[in-house]
Amino acid sequence: MNASSQSEAHDGVSRQSSGGRGVSVLHLVGATQDDGGILTVLRHARDPDGQFRHAVVVHRGFVSKRQPPLDLRESRALLAESSRHLSLFARALGVAIETRRRCRAEHWDLVHAHSRGGFAAAVLLALLPGKIPIVFTNHAFARRTGMYRWAAGRRGLVTVVLNPAMAAHYGLTPESGRVEIIPDCCSDEFFEGPLVRPPGPRSRLALVGVGNLVRWKKWNLVLDALARLPVPLRQRVHFTLWGPTPADADSQTFARELKSQVGAFGLAPYVRLAGPTTRVREAVEGADVFIIPSTDEPCSVALTEALALGKPSIASASGGSVDLLKNGYNGRLFRPDDPEDLARQIAGMISGEGTSATPEQIRDSARHYSASVAWAKYHALYRRLLAGSQAD
Image 1: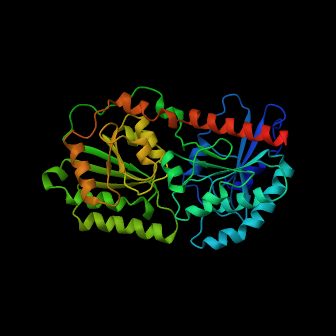
Image 2: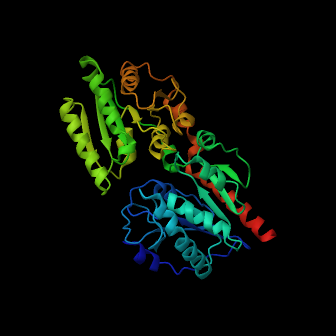
């Protein structure tokens, strides 16, 4: 189902507005593909009392592939990302005007922007006359820190960062109504039910990764690290990588490079590039250790899911992972972009010396990243902002 047909399934009329009980939130994302990320986070939004209505603005031509479905709107102008950053800002005025019209026509109470393209539109919306509250969640450790720091001080625009590490990266001090810390989240279902332990002793350590095959995820580091292990240790580990390859040319090239790397390093007996899956829980439950090698990973939903399933994890000592993993307790941190150090951490896991926490303690370490906790914080923020706009 594409975005326009899915949008037609809704009458576009908000529940009772913020003056009563209900709140309607329009999310500016601009995605061109249904590859997860923030869309996965939005799918996990929890509203047990039915007081909030959410819809997501995506780029024209978006095709929904995942469940549960989202309430979608299409935009010709909004684009999540582009290698030409100026083009995103050039589109921003059109997105801002389009969003204002959409808010009036469909009675949206609040706009929540997420992507880089959404950020540019959010800044303009905050500068335009009107009293629509604007929230921008920064999902990346961007290089242009000054621009985001400047925006965080604008009246009418609330900046949300995902963790203390991201706040420090941008030089921001948390302050209610201006800068908030609310993490990306995973579905509560990952925290429910008994923890699955692989049966009996294994001759091999099952290592699993979950994520798109895109260059910034740096899956090549895992292959490089495995190739550096002494042969007796290498024979005791098997790495399975689950994830789709996006349609863009660089991602397609990167996927081919990974396959070539497996062959060149002689890793075929120890590595499986398994492709996409919709059964993440089963994929992770069947493993011993989860791994995510990317540098400055903002706030990995997959890592949170793995911890919620009681799996010790390996991640780069950078980005949001440093707020999720306590080295030697629920996981191991390796020096960013250092395959030699990554190999040492994998070797420690193989020898059984990687972590001290029990599976139950590992699960508990990530509970504050659950959907119910994260969305309770968002919904409280929305209500505070709407109450403030009505007071003005």
